[in-house]
Image 1 (tube, helix red, strand yellow):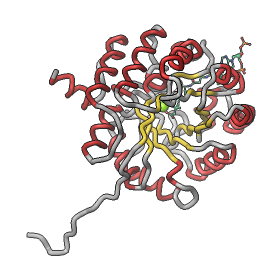
Image 2 (image 1 turned 180 degrees about the vertical axis):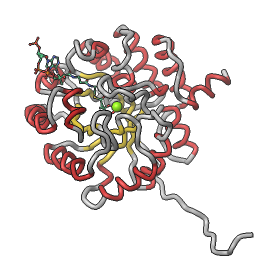
Image 3 (image 1 turned 60 degrees about the vertical axis):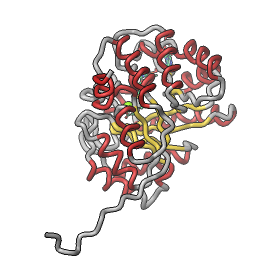
Image 4 (image 1 turned 135 degrees about the vertical axis):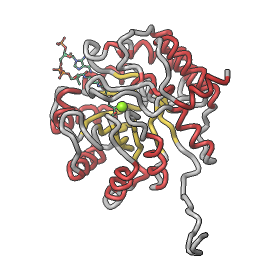
Length: 312
Ligand code: HMG
Ligand code: MG
């Protein structure tokens, strides 16, 4: 019997969500089987056909460190000639050299990346947190000159494979510096997938004391199956931008124990079922994921994609 005090629980959720598809960059950077530029182009074209409008397509990093991204300039040229300005095609940039290459490739948005952890940054980009910001200065100067938008990533927001838990004070300092440099949006990365819904709630409650949460995106790796629950908590805080990877591909070569990103299929299914518009056609997205997983000889980690595949 009800006590009579039970009230229905109401969720206040955004009506529309921007998905930043990171499969071609975060999804593929960790794969040792080198794909041809043509396969990557065809994969990205299928993602576009599925309705994705923001696709992080590659990175201008050291090719000996991340060989899968070595064809960045060639791939971008092919994509730009196919899609013009109709699709936002951001690229990941670590330093001035990468930015010069990106500008030569006429990109209109770059993503710079740092972390809350000194050890992770040292492994990932061979720089301390402070050094990473020194490297960002020429990037943002070039960005201003060429009217290129700058997005910021912060890794290890909830935990680091080398240093453990992250201090909120460190995170706030890094956020402030990135906004001061001119990042229009910051993506908060749960690089090794250790966040849980209660922790996400606690973190966002803290951040909203100092920052406008509308300027954040969330980037959950799904190592422990918590990513979708973490998205739902973020939605309740008004966050409406999420990074995800088709088929659940993903991982950072310098973050041991960081398998796939949140699968775009799982994200789209939950959002569309909650009447939140994503603009993505799930069945067409499944075609893109099947294509790339087949090229890689891998099975999907996405439960939603596995279910769609089983019905075929
Ligand atoms: P470094 O060794 O410190 O660079 O690398 P350096 O300035 O000392 O230069 C050494 C050599 O690298 C030189 O060549 C440079 O020209 C070359 P040499 O003279 O010896 O022949 N070099 C470059 N070549 C091509 N492109 C460049 C570039 N820069 C220098 N941009 C660097 C520093 C950051 C470049 C390197 O450590 C690197 O490439 N690291 C890879 C980082 C990476 O891609 N990590 C994965 C992405 S981050 C991620 O996945 C997390 C995220 O998803 C969010 C989350 O999940 O948390 C975003
Ligand atoms: Mg990532």
